[in-house]
Amino acid sequence: MATSKYESSIPIHLAGTKVRQLGAWTLEVDQSEKAKQEALADDKFLQGLPARTRNIKGVSISTDNGNTTISLDDFFPPGSIALFETWVPSAEHSAGLNNFIASGTEDAFGELDLIDLNFVLYRCDAEERASSGGQDGVYTIPGYGPLVYAGLQGWCSVLEPIVRENNLGHPLCNHLRDGGWALDFIINRTERISKQEGYSRLNKTAHWFKERFDAVREVPSFLLPHYFAMIIQVAYEAAFRRGVALFSSNITNGQSFLQELAMVSVQMTGYVSSASLWPNKPVPSLAAGLPHFSVEWARCWGRDVFIALRGLFLCT
Image (cartoon, rainbow, N blue to C red; front, side):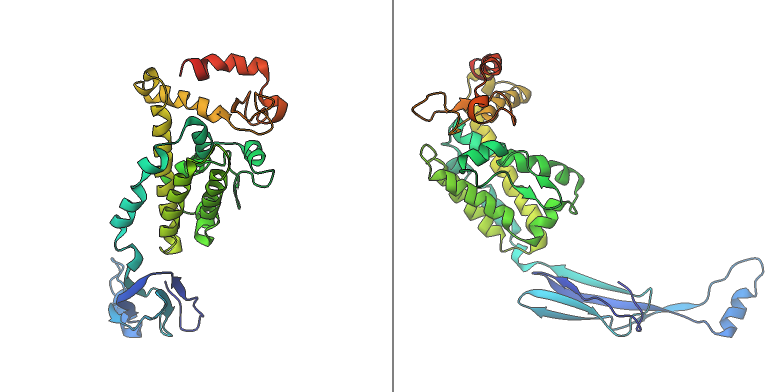
């Protein structure tokens, strides 16, 4: 950072970070007439003006409740540099936090059935609203838009290019740094469904999400995108493995592409109160197509359902 002593500088705030200044220097150039004449004396070569580095105070560092503010000193000419060492105390034991995030998946996801996994992984906006009495749909990321699915697949589809391109300026990353709304959405969504009839197995899943997200709330906000992506990835892989394990042996022993195709049957089958195949009792139903044939009478459109039935159900 650089400025002149006549310019106002904006302090830099580093949340949850400690800072130690290693040094600050400015370059002093001899611009005297004698130095300029000596530089021009040789008509064959371009000579620079003599210069030397000088130690300066550079900045002022203040700490409050674990947060650090760096302010430029009055004297910090253009071209000056300041070098710092920084560290995040709450992340000093990051290996322990990483291990905690990756733990407990067998207990949290290992007892779920395929209908549970339909909720955990998928559910388009219309399906989600049907299960919440019309109150809650898929999550909408400010500056980006709504997810395709309310479940983990919706988050993974957004996170995959972010991780691949290291795009920390993505609207999702900005949203995560601004607050914990996305974390609350996943926790509240899972807790709400676990109290409904037929979804009691998701109690452990809801508890797993809450423990992991509560743990990462303690890290500085700029690290939240990293840990959010880690939790989503760990959960998605655990849920996907559980789904594949529930299929027939030709799927569980098949190639990953075959397993991904088989998981489409989980994507398309779930509880929708307005579209039970039995008139007097709620049972799972197969969607004729998402998102347009996902609820009410259109969900069970006979022609489309029977075209898909052999590949989605009989072969899996």
